[in-house]
Amino acid sequence: MQTGLLTTYHKKHSNRSAVAWVLAGVLLTFYVLMYFTDVFTPLAERLHLGGKWGLYGTLYTLFITVFGIVFIARHGKTPYQRIRTISIMFFQIVFAYSLPHVMEMFNTPGYNFAYFWPLNYSAFYPSNIIHQPLPFILYSFIGAFILVPVLTYLYGKRWYCSWVCGCGGLAETAGDSFRHLSSKTSKSWKFERYSIYIVLLLAVLTTAVVVSAFILESRSGGQYSAMYPTFSKISGPVKGFYSFVVGAILSGVVGVGMYPLMGSRVWCRFFCPLAGLMGLIQKFGRFRITVKDEMCISCGNCSAYCEMGIDVRQYAQNNQDFKRAACVGCGICAHVCPRGVLKLENKWDFASWGDSAGVEHADV
Image 1: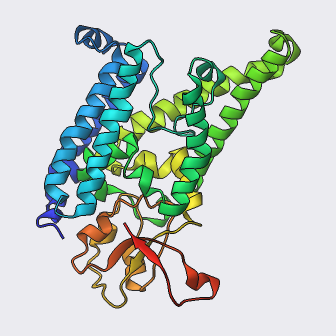
Image 2: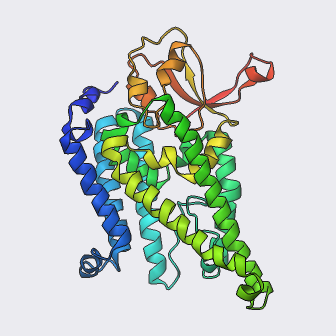
Image 3: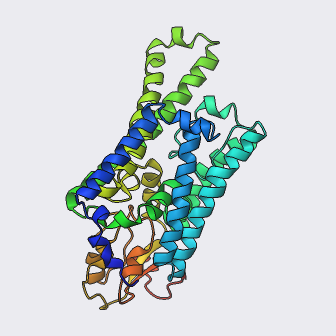
């Protein structure tokens, strides 16, 4: 375990003190102003960032980079933590920030290669697809329907949530001081199991409605509104509702604004539709956390620092290997364990198939 890690609880900004409430208020105000006003536009233009979202993307990348360096200084003695944090920084700086700007310089619509549907909920909106080059369209489909399920089945959610995703990247770096604030109660777990799949269902339905509206418009020769008046009335509001509630309120205002009070993975745990989809796949895949028998001393560090609210100690006490749909494979539970009880592995569970001998596994 890293020396001094438990001092996290004594920091005023991360123990739900008055300082934490003020910080949450500042973050919530920032996100409300960013999403629903143009108050930051003049500043963005003066900095030649092209608009408020250019400013936001720059700040986002800067925070991941700076706090990523801080994270490595704090946890980097463990190779897994060091390498995955460098990966997070790389994908944010290169794929999420730099490449889209370079593409726009060549009059090509910016494209974030690090986001996949349904997290990138507008990826399959026809209004976006028709403006993209064919290779990018193919990448969107291959990424969502082949790359994501195959890699998740083989390596669990961690290949994306803790190594690639910008949302997870901010949580792991800038949100590191707040990871212990995630609720471990059964009520939170129950809410999580409903909320994340409701949002996933909304993402699927929204995409289906928008795509269907486009197809009907095309087939009706431009008379879509007249031929399908009811469908015409709901397609626009459905798209707007999802963008407002999920794209703005849940992912931004609540997802980041509540870091100081609810932990760093509020969005990832409760609302991210891609996390929900990958969680379903992970339950049937190779990734799991294994436990060394009769080694747990019940110190509770693993549960305390699990940002996804998983009671890891319960599994360790029962000598029980486990896989949970919520687990993002950050590895902090193993990192803070003073006895090395926990291990992140990708292996086939032959025992569950009636053959407990000769288990072949690959450690990552």
